[in-house]
Image (cartoon, rainbow, N blue to C red; front, top):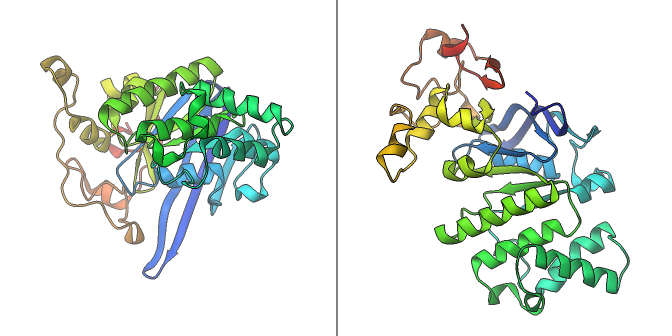
Length: 323
């Protein structure tokens, strides 16, 4: 399930569990995918699907309980404090809530200096000032913003500061966790365009975590769909939108709001799920989606489908497509 054989990141059978008072919650249950150099890989799913936990494990906020995370061949399935200096510098993250991820007591300059201090980029003094100025300029904000505090700027500008902070250590891979969901629609477009511009200019790789399929269609090269801690479908984004195979994917795509009859024609037949998302502490047997799937059969309730290549580069975990 590789992009083009030139993978910068390989996730293999990643498992992450959490102990709760009610039992073991399996947030990620054996997820595998690759991200190529210069690729934007999208991870999509409803709230609770496990997509953010995958991103958090990649940046070292969590250590996976099983499987591998390989970055340029290095096993990084460990906490950030235990990783090599290279991987800690080269893998950065932009969080969903820009206001909550910026220290209100620090100026923008101080916020952008922090990753340089942590990763010992260049030497103190003028070299650091130059790198901070370069980072804020890359995202299109004036140098005068360096002496402002986060509470003095708008939500979109705060997220641009967060992106600048991620760019400051000169990364190769950036995990973007719902980077536009907390922003107004008009600001979302600005942030998305800036992310795409930066990716093309600097050859960055992105893991783009989102539930916004409109953004996926416009930004992402390949897409993986998560449900109940597992990947259920993965394909080139163009094919994902034109020929979705998994009933859950079809359900997600059929719910996208459209503005014209032409856009309506590209949507799959309306798939209406039944029931609610199962409790991950008490996972259903067989296929995790069978409790909501309108096409489920007996084998779906009894046997979990494995991920297989239904078409060239198009992978799906569904008994409807095993023949």
